[in-house]
Image (cartoon, rainbow, N blue to C red; front, top):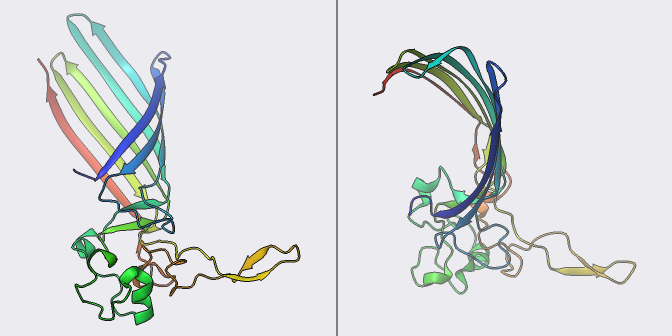
Length: 247
């Protein structure tokens, strides 16, 4: 349910108060594993699951004023933070999910040889339903390029009264541009010659008409150089103000 993955997240965090300063650090590492929604198309498929990711969170809380009487607590706290996250290349749902989530054929507008290479076998009509499970369809899950995300924040918390807090903050998140269709073409296995030591040498290219070399998840319409789709860099800014009543 949800994102269609199981995910193991390992994390550790530490902080230490020095007078009015309280620096902290947090480290996270995630291992996502796809469920049955992430199909395995065989050994030529380079990626099946979403990519591993790691995150570093650094920050400092500054407490310029603090009165912690048992019956009356007041304070002013400022929190500065920064994080860096890198998501490794993998396979996942993307912005193209709405366009391809219904299972459109990836071979629209390509040659009959491409139809065979994409697993259509004996099929000669692109939109025939006769090939059943042997047809490869786009399912909204695509290979994506590794990318970085960075962000920062500043939060202010003022508690002038025992049961009242005034809150304000601003944050930003920046995601670097990256390809969201980035499936590898396959693996070159054709023996062309032998080197000087007598070892076999491949011909240096993947034969797109050979189901033994072509990645079955590769789509010429979406993954070939010049046809790949890129998500451009994006910056998200957020700010808030509020009151918190406590009792």
